[in-house]
Image 1 (cartoon, rainbow, N blue to C red):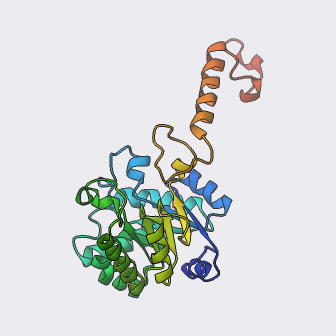
Image 2 (image 1 turned 180 degrees about the vertical axis):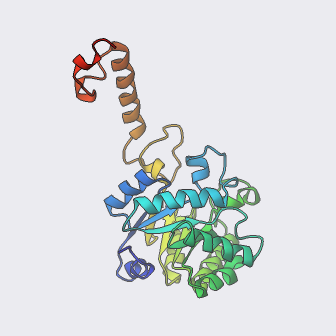
Image 3 (image 1 turned 120 degrees about the horizontal axis):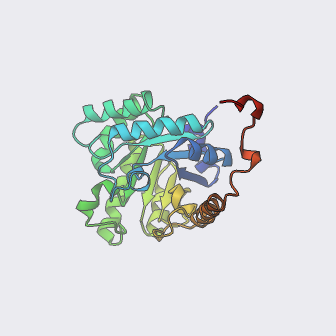
Length: 274
């Protein structure tokens, strides 16, 4: 049985911190699920991490459904949340409902995530009323990067902090089961966490949130050229991979790979006269 949204909400009530990671493919999902991560997000960050785009904006519904299917096949226990990509929910509530339904029905996700606060309150309520669990996302919302003027910390002024608090309360009222707080000063994140009834999960938002989410490639150290301020590299798999690949090249060039252990045999007498 997969973890449910009620179990996630109960973790806040019990004071249990919630770890969450992204995954974008079958094998990574297996690893993350085996570790016991209760929440897996197929983020539209896959546009940058998996597809090499400069932002999340080019990611399509087809991309999200494709990667969501792969993650669902790999993870057996975690609750799977699929991101709603840019312009999949902003144009109209009808489009939003249809696209959210596709992520659940075609992708196999158990919940969807969308960016915004007060402006999407009505949409979130409609989705929840129709049986679609919704994860909210406020603060630095990457789909609004051009409007925000770049990837900047949000909520640093009194007015901005008040807006984010209202956004969080709107998502709580609407029925979101979790609210992501991205790149928000730690004191403000702590206040928001105290004000809302559902779990908050931070990324660059301090320890006062109910949980933490990281991009899996960041925390595994897969890209030594890009380490966000909010990320911690728990290992350095890029270094491990470099060493393994150099070893492969060396053995192939020296003729020491493959050995008989990696080769198949036959009765060589069958080759006589060919």
